[in-house]
Image 1 (cartoon, one colour):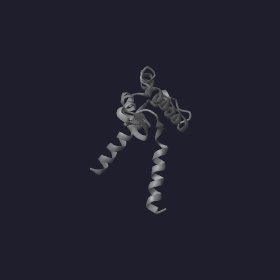
Image 2 (cartoon, rainbow, N blue to C red):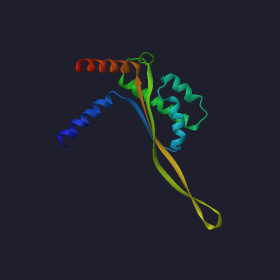
Image 3 (tube, rainbow, N blue to C red):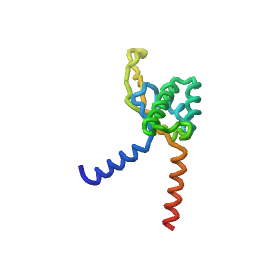
Image 4 (cartoon, rainbow, N blue to C red):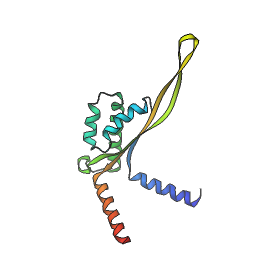
Length: 148
């Protein structure tokens, strides 16, 4: 491995230590249907997002609720001794990507066949802390002041 590639890999692993996320792969729901639910919780406080998902009638909300709980648990592992209420966690990013598509055939009139595409998706949910957001903004303002 070259030195640039190794440095980039080390930098990426350091960034990953400060991120709190969970990933759901090959979820057998259409990405379009999952995005409808994901858009509801993007940028929302964690407790409010859990309430939204719990009382949503969509099937995708059950899977996203479980994923959000997993991300909260991952945050708890990286921040032992801290309370979730004090951290002011919110859903920083949620993105839904298309995954594999299972192709099936459905009989059609006059000896033809129509293709049925059973879509699935990958969901990535990243949590953020209000304290991290404020400290990042303070750091950016300091950087701007030093440049001037």
